[in-house]
Structures are given as structure tokens and as C-alpha cells.
Length: 141
Image 1 (spheres, rainbow, N blue to C red):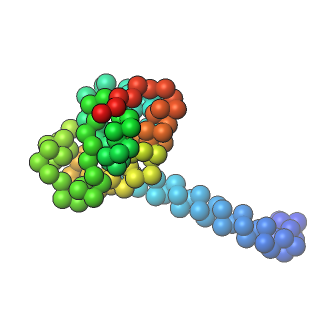
Image 2 (image 1 turned 90 degrees about the horizontal axis):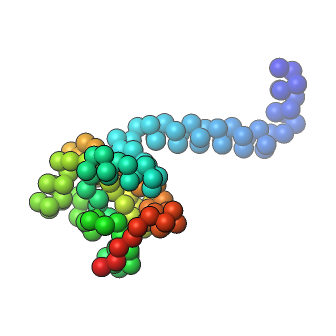
């Protein structure tokens, strides 16, 4: 214990950086566990879609959606999820896979869906970029 205190005293910046990194790691894990949705990689997402007969909501821009999307996906603007239309409300009754271009917008969209009452929401980790990189099928409009 004496050596640890001596090390901390001699390396204040290094010790502070380690403490800050640990706090951030714990905070990130607590936030992740507090989410009401799951995140799955492409292979797990395919199993989820097949097993649960999940609807796919793609919150990418229409231009990105037209460049390539999952077969059967519904392109929905993320901003429209604050007050979803009848089509989206109907889809929220069942399992949903939320997708975006690179995995950045989908978690926020999933959170909006959960707040609106969706119960089985999953986000595609890495978005369509990861889906295409893993060579899963993409269709173009």
C-alpha cells in the first residue's frame, strides 16, 4: 500500500488519467445496461429477423437508403419518430430492427421508439456500413 501511495504521489497525471478512464468505463457500462434496447452485430441481427419476423426500420437519409438497404426495410426519417405515423405505429407492435448508415443515428431512434411504447427493439451495430462489410445482401431502390 505504501508503494502504491508513493507511485500515485510521483505520477499524479498518470494516476489521474487512469482514474478518469475507469470512471468513463463504469459510466458507459451503466448507461449501456440502462438502455431498453439491445445492439446486435449483422449475423445476430439476421437471426433476430428470421426468428422474430422483425420489421426493419432504416433511419438513414433517403439518398443513403437508395444506395443500399436491407431487403424489406422501411425508410423512416428519424425526426418523424417523435410523432410516428400509422405505418410506424403499427410496426412498433412487433419486433423492430433499427438501422442507419453507420450505427450512430440508430440508437437515438431506438430510444425514441422505446419511449413511444415499442417493446422489442434491436439496433444494428455498425449500421449498413458493417452490414455491407460483412457481405450481407443489400438491395438498391
